[in-house]
Length: 431
Ligand SMILES: *Cc1c(COP(=O)(O)O)cnc(C)c1O
Image 1 (cartoon, rainbow, N blue to C red):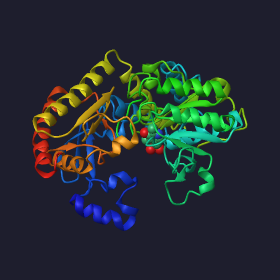
Image 2 (image 1 turned 90 degrees about the horizontal axis):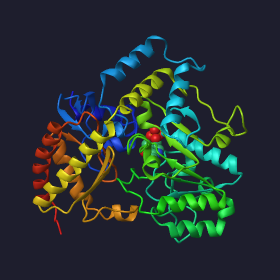
Image 3 (image 1 turned 120 degrees about the horizontal axis):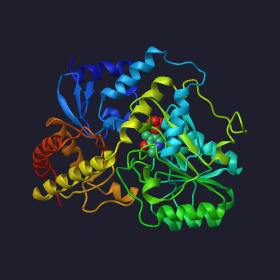
Image 4 (image 1 turned 180 degrees about the vertical axis):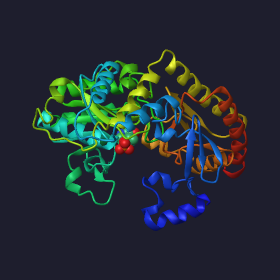
């Protein structure tokens, strides 16, 4: 069966043929690749075509796909039973490991996805402060719960509008949406309604509007404002946790959030999320406190086994040095090739995540990301796919490198890009 045939068939029984919208290739056009298997840095589609993978399941595949040690841990756990709905020792060990690796997390609760982690952290922040309003930033994604599916309203300090049908305006009336990297706007919001603000939630390095780093002083300023006004600072490190560095972005910046959300890497490819932070706050969730939160499959033993083994592998000496070096080499190599082909391009990376932008300079906000040449990205994306390189299928997504991406794989990637940039230069006006 071809990708085209299965995609047609999929659309009969699955809306849009996919179980998460970005997979449908809407933004780049064409037919999504249906994946048959993956190993190390490679994936194969159902037609048997091999690709170098820079999607890494959107981040979890940091040690490489189907890592033998992770598979063995999963297999061993599975033989003992798939789920009990009762506590296990593995959950305790994973919680201890997370608390040990990320010092701001004194206590942690496991859930099954990033969406659940952020939704629960927001509820906890509201419960702990007794306040309703939250601040989020334009272009940051925190999963698909109602109060976080918000886009900026018009005007300066207006409350957001729902960014999805099915979310009542009233549900987002407590969500304030501000531009990323603009501390002045945050100050204004606090000056106006600071006593009502429960928390700020932020991707400390944004990875869901392509990669956008915080400018100097931005995160520090958020920390100071939260402390001053008694609001909680939530770092959504679902993507950056154990990806930007061994202690997430907070380990790189020495900023201590009150709460942190995790997912993706901590499940090693299985469904896991987590939220944690200050003990006095975490103890306000049920069964100790009044903030309700629960999950039938929370702390699932097979997922926990995959997560624990993944964290063990990436705690080995030199893991992040190699990962960062590979990722830096990748973006430098692509930038050099773009320059040789006269394609307007810039790129950035942190740890094992990267951004490529078809614009002159590295963007600092959602507005700037939107100014990139989307057509050029789409041409590049398809040319790379033809050459056997699998990138995230949107100009607004970050890319991911794993420990399995060797020098040889980088060289193959550059050979593909050398051709792809020719196509970009030919088909797009590169003014
Ligand atoms: C992926 C992501 C989420 C949502 O996680 P899911 O597991 O897809 O629900 C939330 N926040 C950030 C920063 C993410 O990257």
